[in-house]
Image 1 (tube, each protein chain N blue to C red):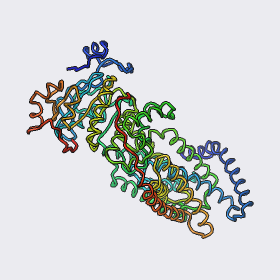
Image 2: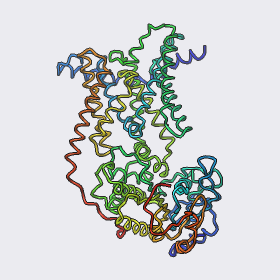
Image 3: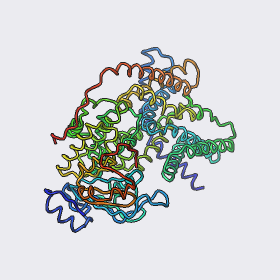
Image 4: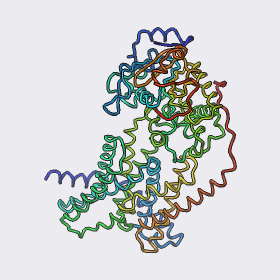
Amino acid sequence: MIPVELFAALQAGPLDAVLAPLYWVLALWSDLLFAVGDATGLSFLDYAFMHRAILVGLCIGVMAPLIGTFLVHRQLALIGDALAHTAFAGVAIGLFLNGVFSLGVSPYLTAVVVAVIAALLIELISEATDAYNDVSMAIVLSTGFALGTVLISLNAGGLAVGINQYLFGNLSTVSAENAAILLVLFAVIVGTVALTRNQLLYVTFDETAAAVSGISVTWYNRVMVMLTALVVVGAMQIMGVILVAAMLVVPVAGAAQVSRSFSESLLVSVVLAELAVLLGIGASYYGEATAGGVIVLFAVGIYVVSVAVGKLQARAGEDATPELGSIESSDL
Amino acid sequence: MSALRNGESAETAESADTGVADDATDDGRGSSGPLVELADVEFGYTATPVVEDISLRIDPGEYVAIVGPNGSGKSTLMKLILGLLRPDEGTARLFGEPSHAFDDGARIGYVAQHASASKEMPITVREVVKMGRFPHVGFGRLSAEDHRIVDEALATVGMSDFANRRVTKLSGGQRQRAFIARALAGEADLLVLDEPTVGVDAESVDAFYDLLEALNEEGITILLIEHDLGAVTDHARRVVCLNREVYFDGPTDEFVESDALARAFGTAASFAGGSGGGRA
């Protein structure tokens, strides 16, 4: 069984080497939050797993709306949902491999691989058919979920494997390894968006003009869906498969209500998402409820407030209409 | 049939005559050879061709208008020229390269019919105009010089006071001005405009065509797709009359005197300018 040995070697060796510095970062972060907990008397900061959960939550609050902004304004809000369900299949594959071959691979790693492949598949289908159609999206979504459930039921470990944490997310199961993986995903996502922000903005706003200006629309669409897959897997730990797409969409929709410019909407969506994440994690700890659901409910509440604020803004801003200048050719 | 304007360099006219367009490395503004060259192009979305047997050549400094009735293939022809579509038959070249492979976006400014862009996205007029600089900066940041060019483009279209307005809150005409400013900010060699004045008020339309004329005098090549025949005959120097195939290609004066219009449009058409504009 060469592949298995290869897998095991890969998993024990290079991965831990890569993640080692991140464990150090996690320890620093934990020390910081212990100190904050001592200073403020917040009891939930007494647990190391909560420190990791908060860090993961903060990262989700940045990367989900960051990518979501580009998706929502292209009417691709549901692609996150489709990818989350294929990521679930990835988790199931990971659990299956672990169960059958005793590999000890993090199911989140297999989820990353499967979700990225599914993302490319959706993109290739849309390129071939010239449209993102909801039918192909629905097919990919259900295939992913079906594959996941079948594999889990076939699993050598039987149904004893806890899949609830993947379906609904769980604060207390965020391991140091998974938190470190998330930091890597976070760096890749934020770095890629920072580098290609001009191109992504142009493609999102006006695909035809972007194509004329020499931007490879196909290539950037592929980058976009792959980043989406990474976000979905990263956010899945806390949000769960079923609710992960909400973080891509709800804060962005709220920000669009109150923002005038694109950069403002990016910033506002991140702020709204962070607010929902922190309130949600805090409330779920004290209320002993599932964090993912509480976070999404807070996000939706914030969205409703944003709509109201947006309406008030529009009413206040109606008075001032600037004079339209004339088209000048004399100063050329 | 090159309708080169006087005042363009003799070198341009000379090399245009040779018709050689393989000098892909030459990227100077006064580059030799045609900017656009279509040879026997045919294209159809289905088995029935939308355009066929199109041969067209546009040299630096020209001001060309493509006219034709609705459904005549004007917008399709434009997409073939820009490389957004690939011809089924024949070849399309842009700046001497196959159109679909051409990727120096800094050389082309493009104003679409305003339907194409996202309508709900929060984005300001200035952010839209800044996109015109994106082909110049690539992955980098806009410099102070880029911002100056953006401000200038905004001023040119009379939209300076609207710079921080959300595009979704603008009227159709104002939005169109923003897109025109974006094309200007690109400082392109070739401006391609697809019915750019739809929704723009009549007074501004005249000012806009004056602007195009001034740009053309600067040496910028202009390709205009229009259904407003009045505007075309008043401003363009060369007319290409299209209805699936080219019915006329030549100086505007000759077009007015010819019967190409009646043949292409089928029924009585006039130069009074049709404002019943749908898209082709």
